[in-house]
Image 1 (cartoon, helix red, strand yellow):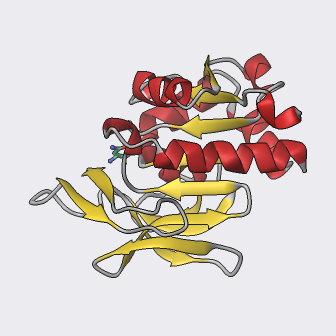
Image 2 (cartoon, rainbow, N blue to C red):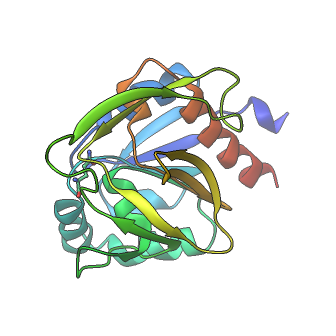
Length: 199
Ligand code: GLN
């Protein structure tokens, strides 16, 4: 019975690809809520931290008083998916930035890792855990993971670099599935939320 209920999935709504995530969540039949205030964190089944600019999003998380409550919720088990800048917000360590943001996921991340020459590109990659067919991946000034801790499962590598990983209820991708027609990643995240809610 419970599985018939839509998951209520928040999207951190300060900047970046918010509307695109919202549309993908609605297309798979789940409920999307744009989150800008700490009080909105209370009844979510999961939250997406979109791409954008991690430095700006970090500042806004602090300014709105959301940094600590969001961190607390994630540490208590709220499912979270960080795409691109969102991955940077989740990382416990950044190799080329002195700032740490939520610092909840045991990954070490390099910002703008592909340099300026190839700062945006796309490709098709096979990710058996997420989709039975090759998926389009779009990278925009993307970070990648240079070290994943013991509890972190690597889901995808491109040219030897980790670009998708999962640590229990925390999921991070260097790329932007919300900018493609694929719904596979949003379905995968909704499943993490559903498993969590239904135990
Ligand atoms: N380069 C951005 C940052 O460091 C991330 C880019 C993105 O989210 N598309 O925050």
